[in-house]
Amino acid sequence: MKEKTLFFDLDDTLIKCSGYYDEVEDRVISELCKYTNDYNYDELRKAFNIRQAENLLEYGYGPKNYVLSLKQIAKETINENYEKYNLAEYIEKECAILYDLPMELIDGVEETVKYLYDKGYNMNIITKGMQDVQEKRVSKLTIKKYFKKYEIVGHKEKDDYIHITEKYGLEPNDCYMIGNSPKGDINEAKLAGFNTIYIPNEHTWGYENEEILDCEPETKVLSSITQMMEIL
Image 1 (spheres, one colour):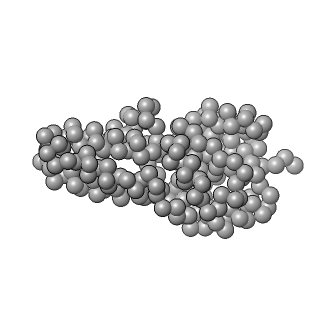
Image 2 (tube, one colour):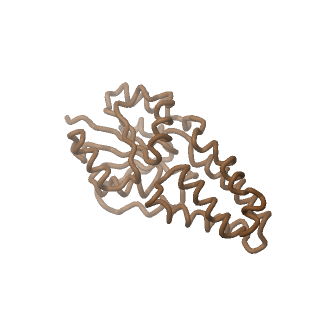
Image 3 (cartoon, helix red, strand yellow):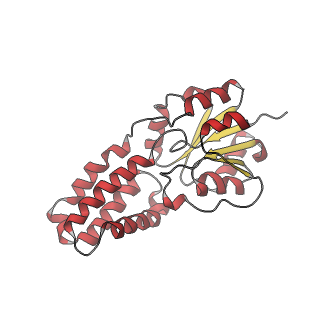
């Protein structure tokens, strides 16, 4: 029997992440609302998320894109008050935590990962974002001893998955990608021939939400990572 290779997403699959971004976004957008009568909270938040998506190609995922997009939207909507009230400095201060987030495991992760490790699965991590930020997160991961390798990519696209299988001499149909993002973790992996396990997370960024592709290999949908102990 061929060895099954498991690839886990890091942020919001193994550890908590996007919830912190949501909290910062809420605080900053609420603050910006104090300086304009032309835009309400929902309009500013929508404009910010659209700008993040627009900046992805050049700046990728992570705090750099996030901070830049917040500044751009603030400057464009608050106008002269942006400079008057030093809002760029305020945004940088509020976003500082995003460069070194607390490393908090999602419930059930440690017992599940240990169980799968003890069963002999070849386990690895694929994460996307800023190289230095993600390397720091992996280095601080309390369960990193269970993972053989980790890969940091810019966008988690089909070609990224194909490159990884070629790099390690793996067959896609012997690989599983486990994650919370329908776009990057599931659909792009499916297009590369990976088996996929989707574990929804309430804090998944809207840009990553799309319909799961109705094609083989079939995607297993779990309500908790602990259910992996039942199916593998």
